[in-house]
Length: 167
Image (cartoon, rainbow, N blue to C red; front, top):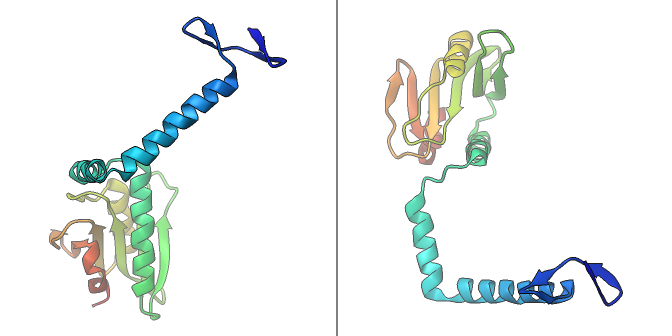
């Protein structure tokens, strides 16, 4: 600890006494150089973009929640007025949860589960919910390209084909 301009500062750099203002200035200039050069250099930006693209699908705990929110917004925007939309979850020992149920009156017509996976599967809680609400049709919305059956009356549905839910 030493005095620098009447302030107590704890900083050493290669044995020399350095004021915090000098360290701040150094890191600020380094940061600006990095940002201005790295992201403005076309070749570097293209390489950075390609490497991100090659890394997809990105795995992040928040990604699934964001994907689910995005899909729900799209489905609700497409939903005809004859349907009411609900989330279904129970607190019982046999937990049951489904991302979206679309009803007409008291009858659940469509159940929708949203998965950020190229190989979507139903969880135990989703299966329990489907058995409890007994929808006429169940869709598993995912970021893939093909729609295919999982079980009787349960199909995967690419997000690009969301209008099919209401056909």
